Length: 116
Image (cartoon, rainbow, N blue to C red; front, side, top):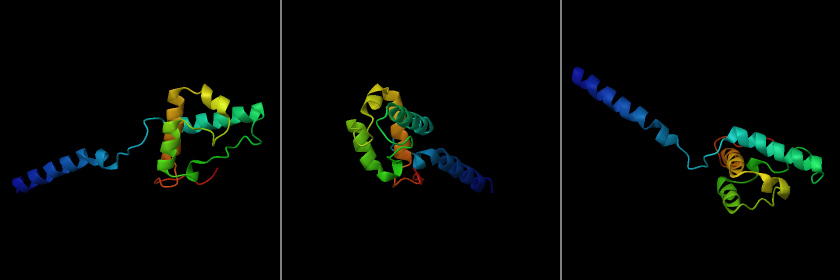
């Protein structure tokens, strides 16, 4: 009886110990919540400057797949967003946070962004 309980608990410990590794993503290390806030702040500053017509973002994370966002952020080609002076003023940490937001809410993610 004790032999079976020992085996059961050993298997349970190994299963629970590897649980985070099973669901780990190969995504960016940024903070997606902070990235969402920073992205909206960039668009708002761009709108106040008069470059865009609306303070709501025209580019949504669900517009592209993760691989497409990865290519954009790795190449630092932010022309699709507009507002290049605001993007140039961002720190690398802020860009990683925005990247994490777009990656975690992409069209092929488990929880894509549903509205703009």
